[in-house]
Image (cartoon, rainbow, N blue to C red; front, side, top):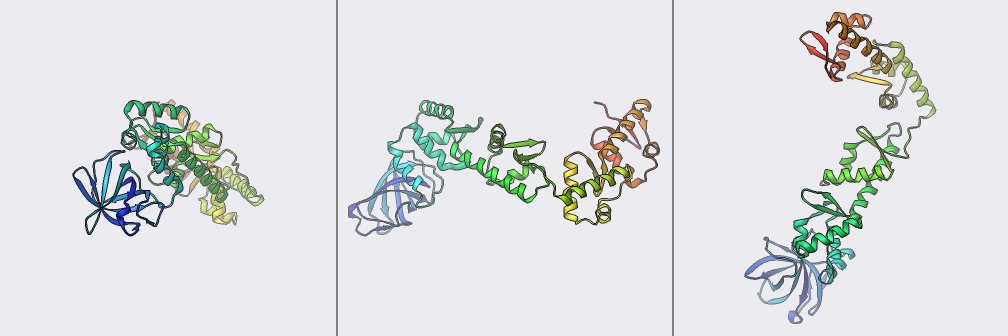
Length: 367
C-alpha cells in the first residue's frame, strides 16, 4: 500500500470510480493494483485528490517520488502524481483527519509531518527507520524534530532500543480506555479491591506493546488516578464497601476460621453452615484473602491468618533448635491435626520458602 496525491487527466473521458483496477508505474516498474479514493466515490477528469494505492506487489519508493498511472485495459496513461507515504497503514475512507493530513504532507514542516504519521499509526507507533522513509527527512532533521516534540510531550518514546514513538493523542486514548475498564470492573465486582494487572492488559488492543502498557499504567499512577498493589490495580477513588448482609457474613466467616484454628472446615461447608449464597460467600472470602485475614493453602482449604502466623513462629523456633522436623513432630505441633490439614500446611510453608523438604523431614530454608 502507498498513499498518493493523484491527478486524473482531463483526457480521462469518464469519471474514475473507487477501487478502479490500474497499472502503477515508477521508474521501470509496472505493478497492478487498485486505486482507493479516500474522499470521493468517483473522480472527474481534471480533478486532483489524495488516494491509497493497494498494489499486488511491493515497490521500492520514497516520499516525494513521482509516478504514473495507466488504465488496466486498454492500456493508456490516465494520471499520476507524487508519493505521500510509502509505508502507510490501511486507511478507512472518508476520514477527515487522514484526508487533510495527506493533503498537507507536501507542504508540511518536519514536526507536522512526524505528527501526522504517528497519529495515523495509532497505538502501534512508528520507529525511527520508518519515519525516515515516510518523511524523507535527513537523520539530523528527524533527530531535531523528534527531540523537540518529546520535550513538548507531543510524542512519547515507548521503546528506546527500536526507537519507536507514539503520538500523545494515542497515548491519552489508551489512558482513558484503561480508566473506563477499571471503572466497569469496580462496578461489576464491588467487593474486589482491584483488577489483576494482566487482566487489564488483556483489555488493551491485542497488538499493544507491553512497554506501552506499562508506560500508560505508570503515568496513571503518577497522575494519582490509579493505585497498584502487588498484582492488582484499581482506580484511586475505589473503596470496597460491604452491604449490611455482606458485612454480617464477613464477621461470621472470620469467626468460624478463627475458632477452628488449624483444623478448619472446608469452604463449601462454611458456606452451607452460614446458609449463604455461594457466589456472595466467595466474594466475601476473596475480600478476606486480599485483606490478609484468611490464608489459602490448597483447593478448598483456608485458615485464619493468626493461626498460620502462630504456627510459623513455633515451626521456625523448633527448626532453629532441632535442625529438622518429621511429620509426627509437626502433627504434635498442630495439636494432632489429620493428614488432610498437615500436608497442605507443610506444602504451604515450603511454597513460602520457610521450610525445605529433604526426604521425609523439613529443614529451615536458609535466607
